[in-house]
Image 1 (cartoon, rainbow, N blue to C red):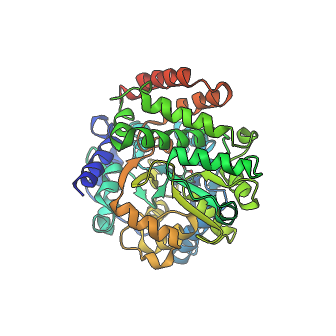
Image 2 (cartoon, rainbow, N blue to C red):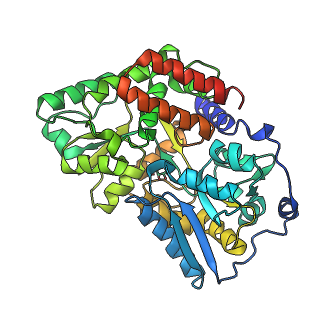
Image 3 (spheres, helix red, strand yellow):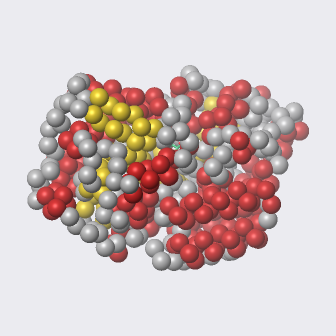
Length: 439
Ligand code: GAL
């Protein structure tokens, strides 16, 4: 218990590391917000609302559509412009967003991960409007865990509203296929290796589905494996430059990936996470390590949890929860300000989160959404979220700055080709020296 509480504090501390040290320039909008004059104005009820995200995949777009439906029920005369840029994990969207933000053409609101992905970039550059007054007027302190609030806060203000919590350390499997081969769901890395080997010997040539387009999926394997090999304390330290990527747990983490790649599809660099899901559904593969947006995909394809598919924590991470938290904020100078405020209110609302999360595969960020509208796996995750040790994802923007994650993605692309554990560990440490030491 006390360990969990401690871990939660450390989780928040790491996710918001740069928050207190960033010098944010305050402009008129901030002053007005601080005085409460932008607090929860009514939407005009007309005009446009431009929402930027990367939710184009199965489950993602259905979840987003639910939020849009709910918004339209409240504001039927607002035209929602869906500016979603395809590419899992924002692999293409983030660059498009950067161009728009730098060019003074921000969308009315955009998807961004809680923590450093927003704080160390657009908040630091003074391009965001605080949503503190919206938050306070809505009373979200009483329904959003303080841990999550702290991650989206810096310099005494709140910068975005969490709409969900995804779990990044999940191993999904085709249950009927696994059962038919008499293999148990593996819980340790060694058990996973042996399950892959058994499945291959029983006729499944590539039992591990991997979509590595953009390489962020390999970064998920890496961070989950570092958590498995080094534990939550080591994970926290390495993501804050207090341990080295040349330390044994990282080399172990890379070695496991290297071993598992022998069982993965060789066209992995050409496909994304949802295509990897399809390999599991069709029975070409049995397993995929992926966030629970994979479950959103399974749900849209009418795959039944604990019947057609199952899930266990990624190998070696039982009792730990890798947090991937999507949020929405409001840039300064947006065209449709009151509609954007109403959007943020919808994202933070009980009804919005109840409609969105069952299709998205995530659990609500709010604690007052009834589990009854969720499938059995989400219900289990909601319970585990309360007791597991929480750690913030680096691959998905909470633990480390974006430029570090970008560098790691590039490096892991090289690793997939060269499979050189020592060279990769050294390169990762160089990235830590460059991007984490100063943060
Ligand atoms: C994550 C995001 C999820 C999901 C996933 C795949 O970064 O937090 O909501 O969209 O990418 O695209």
